[in-house]
Structure formats: structure tokens, C-alpha cells
Image (tube, rainbow, N blue to C red; front, side, top):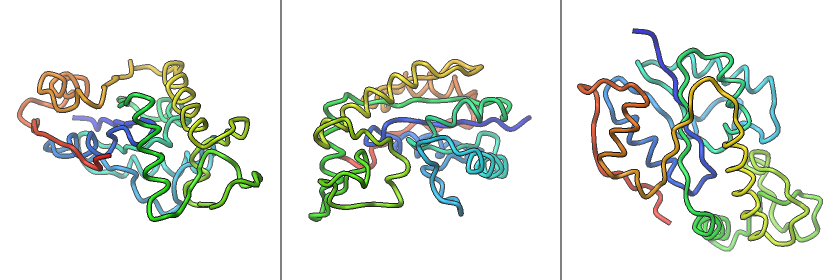
Length: 207
């Protein structure tokens, strides 16, 4: 049986950890969440060198269904679709207001005010996170961080809708993830054999 690939995308703070754990828990499946690659995470702006390196890494994963989960794959999906046979794409999403509030809590934890959506050129950008800033778009035309995150959600959703790939993208709402019938639909889409499926409750990174 030829190897199949899956890339799971979503804005972040939307259930990506949970869905990766669900699929990875099935037999003969190897699905990471934000695979710790030597060259680091992917840039928001498409970078061909990083794309080629990540392609090699995905191809090296062992299993019948292999892949990775991360918000930063969005602008690389069409590249991977052109270079990987049997690629499936899953998009997990959460309501905009909840994503905004969750990112606010996460980026203001422990008094460190991270803002990934405004460039370092802005005078009001207090804290620079060179590791993660590159993975988000610069939305300097927005006034506040809250407004920028909301705009990021809109931008992300629109780009997913406009992706042009060979296979239809499987959309799943985060609050449907633990419904057995939805897990069955997901496993069917991924063509995971019945004998390899593990149905279970997953809820990681609450908040």
C-alpha cells in the first residue's frame, strides 16, 4: 500500500493539537503537531527553500498515513499538493471571537505582551518574538492587536476557501471533533482502514 499524506491547517487556538492527537492515535498513522524541523517553522510568506526541505522531511516519515499539523502550512498547501501523491488536507476551525480571545490570553500570559501580527517597525510593538513572528502576516494597517487577530482569522478562512488543490479539503468545526459520526467522516476521508481506527475523546490546550 502506498504511503498517504495529510496536512492539517487552522488559524491556531482552534483544536490543531487535539486533531493531530486523534489521528496520530490510529494504528499505522504518524501525524505530528508542529513537527520540530531542524530549519525551524515555515514563514508566512512562501519560502521555496523551506518548502523543499519540509517536503523531504514529510517524505521521510514512517507509516501508512503520515503528516503534520500547523497553522503555518496554509501558504504551502498548493506546493505540497503538486509534489506529494495522495495528499489530503484537513482544515479545523473555530469561531472568530473565540480564536481572538484565546490568542489574547496566550500572547499576554505571564505579563509578556507578544504581538505576532504587527511588524517590529511599529512603535507600539513592545515585544518581538523572532521565532514565531515570521509565521504570521504583518497586518500593520489594523489599529490594535485584537483587531489584527480578527483580521488574521478572516484572511486565513478566505485563503483556505480559495486553495486550488486536487482533493477536496475536509472542514471540521472544533466542537464537532469529539462526535463519533464526525470522527468516522474524518477517518473515511483519510482512508484509514476500520481495523486501524481509534475513536476517542480528545481535548488538548483548553482555552
